[in-house]
Length: 155
Image 1 (cartoon, helix red, strand yellow):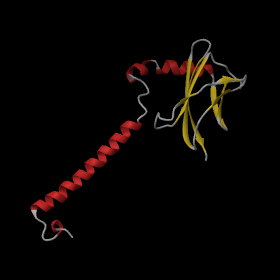
Image 2 (cartoon, rainbow, N blue to C red):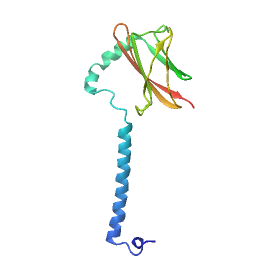
Image 3 (tube, rainbow, N blue to C red):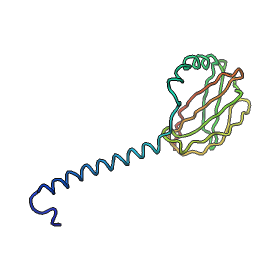
Image 4 (cartoon, rainbow, N blue to C red):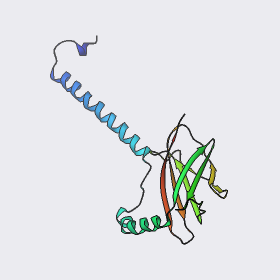
């Protein structure tokens, strides 16, 4: 043993032990805070108050479309089916889809989709785990449709 750990606990030894506990706690907090900030995917909206002013109107317009979205992963492709209340396939004026992890934007992929008459299909690169699919589509009348789907891929 070294000389520091021998003998009675004096004021300077107690201070060194006490201070080292706080140094460890502060270091761990800095590491955790840095990790949280680096993996934060960002804001959903710039101003939540402004977004809330049209939320009910936008939701009612989206629900009036009667669209439902279903996504399935088939090998290295994803198939996204958008159907109306009758179950018929819908081809919106525009479709933008992003496939990524729920907690980070590092793996986000903006999908290159093609419509084959019944489903949108596009290549994806993925590993097993929890994924999210964000879809924004615009109807022919200009109504915006947004949906987020959870996709769990087993390994």
